[in-house]
Amino acid sequence: MNLTLNDEEIKQAITQYVNKQGIDTTDKEVDVIIKSGRKGNGYTAAVTITDQPTKTVKLASDNTEEKAESNDSNDGNDNPDSIFG
Image 1 (cartoon, rainbow, N blue to C red):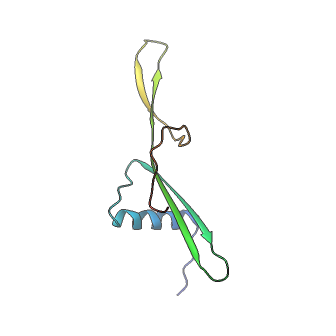
Image 2 (image 1 turned 180 degrees about the vertical axis):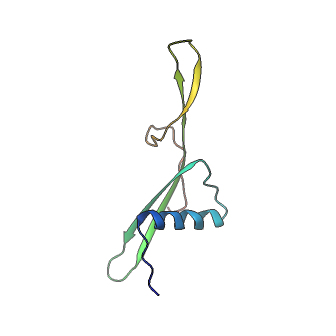
Image 3 (image 1 turned 120 degrees about the vertical axis):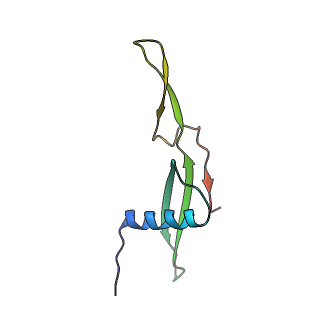
């Protein structure tokens, strides 16, 4: 039997593995970078888990504030939690 996994399926499998190791990824962004080694050294996966920051948005109509979820993980407010050095 041969199985072929695409990038998204590989990411999902690695995320499930990380969860089984006791690391909670709920409401977090999981980035997986897969690199192939040289001269038969195989593949490695670098996994970075970051909290998704919440930003405060001021509404002009009634001067109230709401929290908005942001997918921008490069705003300097991230709290990375990588399992690889």
